[in-house]
Image (cartoon, rainbow, N blue to C red; front, top):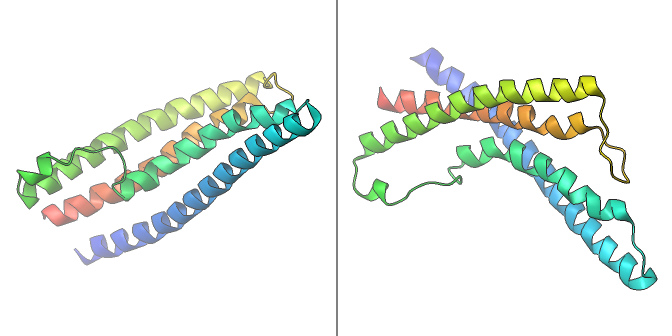
Length: 168
């Protein structure tokens, strides 16, 4: 039991670091997206002609905003959930429901991690480049999928172990 408590502590510390990093990167990405769209509007207003890459950059960055934040949002319980059920069930059933939710997230994250890795590898081998003003390899965008699902796998595993410990 002591080993499990120590393991949970180490896992929580690792995930706390990943959570802070994911939120920091997310904030930087949001700032870049807002700045790019603002600069695009300003340059079009002043000169009548803007830079296409300022418009094309935000959609490219969105995948890096969304997928790495899946795990931290699940960990903070800020992901989509149903609050009504919790009013009518006991704490033991709430813990069981959270455990099942974490288990589903863990299994799904593992499946999507593998699929994202395969897709990233495929596009890396193909060497395709996005056909926009910025020359960005397609695999770079796809790399957000396995990165995000690896983070989700770690966070859902932490929740699984924590919920299992609470049920014991």
